[in-house]
Image 1 (tube, rainbow, N blue to C red):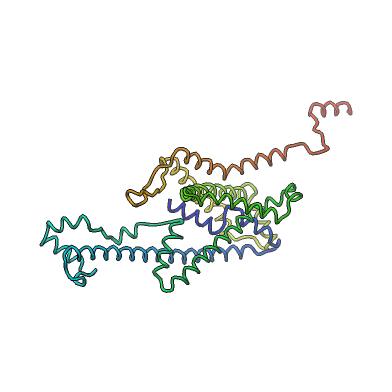
Image 2: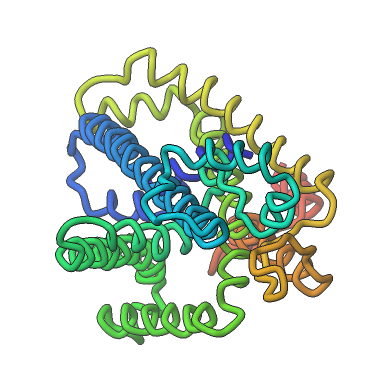
Length: 366
């Protein structure tokens, strides 16, 4: 699943399969050098991802270290209070020595005390990974709180999150409104500003569901199942359609007409071979893991245990997951059926003539 999540993250960051790249590119000039732009954007995205991973894992290490030291300090206070020694007699450096000595010299007292002592482990803190909203709003906030000038970093961090959300929504809304504006019905009855406002208002109402008490669980469902399956399938169909249905040679000629030269062998190998093989492998692995993985689980807070525990999704939630998976990909077969029916319907003013009547007319002429 780590590779599937990594591939999905690339789709997220580059905007692959969402339609935003196609929508933005429709505003470019015909002879725009999109090859150079694709290379620049890819390098910028990779560099940003590497930098973000360094920051993320640094925050993880910082959080784990702070929690581990806090745990040791609580154990030290318990030892000082239980042994009635000077406060500076036990430090974090000699704490393990005191525990081993207490176990040897006062085994009964240590047995009674050990059940109250916390088990501090830096490895367990590092293994406790947080993702999604917990990473953005809890882990980072906790790390910023312990930095110098936390007020400044808090303002900068949440302003960055705001700009990130606005930038993402600009691409998503453009991907929705651009094909809608191509519709003759909407173009004649609704202007551009009203259409953009209606789409944003619809997104607002849909997003209100994530702010309810159960919103975090809905967010987990959408985050885990809304995009991974559909993105892999959409990108795979895009590659197959361009390379094997439209034709790679015709695609090369189109590129040559736009930028003045044909793409190199590297691009053709990636388009026709490497890309489809990788995506098919990820797609098959995702479908097999979803089918054979049993009942899927989510993390829910247990107030008695004081921690998150995995629970199985109820039947209603599993039905929502299936409908969510189908809703994002059903548009492709529906639009294919519409295009097929549109192509085969008789043109206006032209009547179809049976073959038998054509043969009879030919004999009469002869």
